[in-house]
Each structure stands twice: as C-alpha cells, then as structure tokens.
Amino acid sequence: MSGNLKQQRGWHIEYLFAIGAASWMIHLGVVSLTFFIIQFVEPVAWAPYWYGAMLFGTGLLFALSLLFRRYDDRDPQRREFFGWLHSLATTLVGLTWGVGALACASGDAETMLYYTLVLGGTALGAVSSQHSLLRSCMLSIWTSVPLLTIAHLMHEKGAKGAASALMILLFGVTLTVVALRMRRFLIRNADLTGELAAKVEELSQITVDLSEARRRAEESDRSKSRLLAQASHDLRQPVHAIAMFVECLRDHVADGEGKRLLARIDTSLSAVARLFRSLLDITALDVGSIKPRSSIFPIGRVLGDVMRQSEELARGRSVTLCLVNSEAMVETDPGLLHTMIQNLVSNALKYGGERTLVGCRRRNGHLDIEVHDAGQGIEEADKARIFEEFVRLAPHGAGRTEGLGLGLSIVRRVADVLDLDVSVKSRQGRGSIFVLSGLRLCDGSSAAVETHEMARRGADLLHGFRVALIDDDDQAREAMATLLQRWGCDVCAHATAPLYSELTEADFLLVDQDLGPGPTGLEIARDMARNGYRNTAIISGILKPEVEREAQSLGIVMLIKPVLPAQLRSLLLASVARKAELC
Image (cartoon, rainbow, N blue to C red):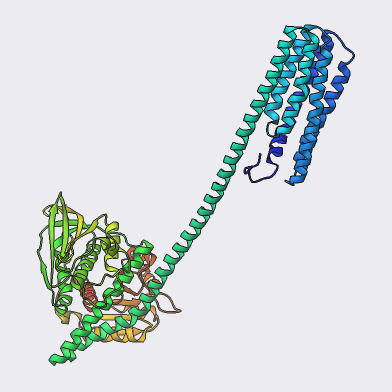
C-alpha cells in the first residue's frame, strides 16, 4: 500500500487489489472443497454448473488483481474502472453463492448446514478483504445472505425455519456493521499515515535546511578565520618593522620631548600588537591548534609579568593598578594563563574606572584569581553577552570604545581549553569582579618547578655573534638587521635562501616563514636540521598548527609577529649561553 494514502485518489482501490490475488486464491480453494463435499455426499446435477460459475467469477477477480498491479499508473479514472469491474465480478460471485443456497434447500439438512457455514465464512472473509471498497463488500453480503435466508425458509417450514432465516439476516446486519467500522478504521489509519508522511517530509526538509545552514555557518567560520589570519599576516609585517625601528631610535633620542614621543609611539605599537595577538588567538582557537602544556610554577611570577606589562597602559589612563601577590604554586599552562589574566586586566584598565585590583583567593583546594575594578558596572542582561566575540560595551558617559571586542571572548574560550571557569559579578555603579576559578594548587616543596635560567649579561655578550637573516620583506629585513647590529651582532641579511655554506657559518639563523615563491622558512630550517644545525628561529605572521608541530619536533623556535625586541634579545642571549656551555 502506498505511504500517503489520503493524498491519492483511488487509494482504497489500491488497498483492495493489494491483497486481492491472495484472497481470491483462498476463495478458489474453499469453492473447490465445497464442490467436492457436495458431490461426495450426494451428487446433484446443478453442482458442476455452480462450480463453473464460481471458477469464472473467482478467476475474473484474480485476473483483475494481477492486471491492476501490472497496469496501475495511478490514474484515478483507470482505478475507478477497475473498481467497478471488481464490484460486478463480486456481484456475480455473491449471486452464485446465493443461488447455490437455494439449490441446497431441496437437499438434506446436513448439506444445508454445511453450505450455510461455508457461505457465512465466505461472507466474513469478504468483509475482511473488501471493506476498503464498501460497494463491493455490500454486494458480496447482500447478494448471498438474503438468498441464504430464503433457502432456510424453503428448507424448513414453520418457526424453526423462520428463526434460522432471522438469525442469518442478523448475521448479515452484523457483517455490515463490522464492514462499516473497518472502513472507518482504515480511513482513520489512512489519515494518520498521510499526516505522518507529511510530517516526515517536513522533518526531512528541515533536516536538509539545517544541514545547509550548518554548512553555510561552517563556511562562514572558515572564511572568517582565513580573513583574520590573512589580515593579521599582511598587517603584522609593517608593524613588526616599525617596532624594530623604534627600538633602534632609543639611543639616538636624547631630549625629553623626543623620548616622550617615542614612548607614545611605543605605547601605540603595544596596543596594535595586542590587537594582533587577539586576532591570532581567535584564529588559533577556531582551528583548534591551541594545546595546553601544563607545568608547575608560582602564580606570583605570571601576575608580576602581567602587572609590569600593564603599567604603561595604567599610567596612560591614570588608573591605580594594585596587586595582592601570592606565593601559591599552581599547575596549568603558564602561557595561556598569562593571556587570560592579561586580557582581564586590560579590560579592567579600559573600562574599570580609577582603580584596578588583582589578587588571589584559595577556595576548596583550588586557587581563584580575581580582577576588581571601580567602573560603572555591567547590567544583568549584558553579563553573558560580554563573553561573545566582537561585543564592546561603552561605559556610561564614555565615547568610542577601543579594541575589537575579542579579549573576554578569548578568556572564555581559553578557559574552556584549560578546564577553568570564568565568571563576573557586578552591580550598577559598584564596579565589577571578574573571577578565574579552578586553578589546581600544588605543593611547591615537592613539585618540579619550571625554571628559566637565562643569562642576563651585558650587551657585550652579543658582540660578534653571527646572525643569518632571511626575509623577503625589505622593511622588515632592514629593521631587523639594524637592531641586531646595534646589539653588536654580525648580521648577514638575505632576501632569499642563500647557499647552505653561508648559513652554517652563522651562530644563529632567523628566517621568515613566508618567503614568496621560494622555499618556506620551515623547509629551510628542516634542511638545516637534517645536517645537525638547530640554532634556528622561524618568524611567522600566521600560526599554522602543522608548522608549529613540525618546528617543535625539530627543536626550532617559533616567533609570532610582531616580535618584541626584548623577546628576540632573550632568545639570542640564550643561544650565546648555550654556545658558552658547549665551549
């Protein structure tokens, strides 16, 4: 039977013929057995004619069932034509059963009883197989049952015969009621089937729409990540060069006004660098390349670094920045934790009024880091929204807000990576408290505490230190070379990869990752590493997980633009220290 019966004209005809062939094969068996019994008990002259008429009617109905299955093209008129043929053939079969009953009326009681039982069973079978086409069902019942009633009146006179005839009529009425109920049940079932099919079709369409919407959203996210990565890379180059040039200018500016302007430039560059770092962090989080590297360390070291890096921003905004230090030892990724605290402190300095306080609180075996500010507070409806990307809430009475609105989003997403919780408590006019909770406390006496013993010697340590520099960007290459020379390094700068022998003569190799059509920085570093040379740092404007993983496996440092001069200087001093140890 078809899945959506209600929406198809003639569905009841389809249902009728779906079971028709099997039903009429059973009917043929019943007819043949009836003929055999009648002939076996007392052969009568009319039986062969009756059997022939039954064979014709049953065969016609069987053939109609086969033809309908073969030629049904769901044409309503063709289906209706098959339905009328079925009714005519059913009428012929019903009349044959009734005529047979009249013929049995002149026989013995045993034959009459047997024929009555067979006809009653056949009529019941007609109800079960033909109720979908009520016309054929009624013709089956009321062409045979009335004639059977008359046959009982003829077979036995008097009250007994009348009682038997009345019971047979009541049986016919009962069959009619059953047929009507089965018809209603079938229609209700067809309605439910149609509704279910419509719902399934609707759900299927919704599923398709959702899949398409998800595909578009994923493509949009990928496009956003590619845009952020490419914009970050293209803009980092000039900012990276400017930072190097500014560092070179420090010794050439002696007057107070010049130093003040240089400090302003340095502050602006730091702000731009923070924006780029936010873009890079969001890109890395989108592609899932941030993997935590836990170690045990004093929380005071990270807090101290954040405070030192935030002093200039606090002074520029006339904000009192205070730290309640802690000697607690914690276990997590120090770099990612630094990023989170730095973003929370920067947010407080921008929007938190005249005072910002950073401190720690022990709670249930864990350490919470709290950043308090004295700002206007956050409305209840905005407390969840501030952790979304590109959301910037302008403080009361403030003008244009700064930044991209990524800082708190990065905090939330990095907290998920580190399995930490971040929350905010705030009241209008009473300031806000951002809480970073869930840091695992450790015993410092038995912990393998991470230490950095980099030698901080004078600038003379870099005197004569040979550095090979490869960068296809003229400004970045010139700025980097100038700064290295100021530190006393012997610099050999190249726009493309030189001969291998020229690189191995250097004490340290600085190579940009993206060198245009030539080999990448990683490919150059890989060739050098194969020959035992590992004093290499790759400078990149885009953080690619596969590049970072291979660089780590080769023992090569990755630097992300814009590179801070202090970061570069520390890297070179560490290389000098290793060289001294080997000597």
